[in-house]
Amino acid sequence: MKRVYSLDEARHFFLCNSSGSIMCVHPDGKEKEAESFPEAEEAFKRKCRVCGCTDDRACVTDGLACSWVEADLCSACVMKEANS
Ligand SMILES: [Zn+2]
Ligand SMILES: [Zn+2]
Image 1 (spheres, rainbow, N blue to C red):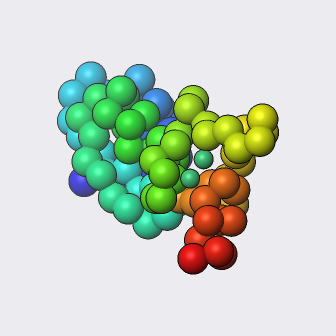
Image 2 (cartoon, protein in one colour):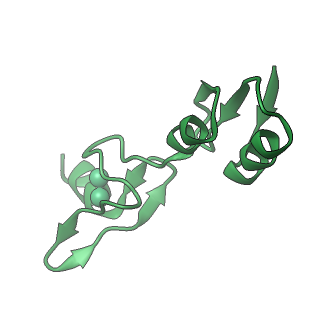
């Protein structure tokens, strides 16, 4: 199975191939099979491993939206982790 490392590669695959599936390799090392572009989009979505926030749904602390500190850890939770 073809492995893709970015959403752009996945988009290209589904533009050129009407059927078939790919293995999406997320920057954090997780692999997920996708049979359509929406599935690939889901596979490449970043999600905080602690609070579960995503690019479209950041968590807000003291009026500030969080940002990414690691591939799967947001700035709001890095502080929580440091305190625990
Ligand atoms: Zn978080
Ligand atoms: Zn967050």
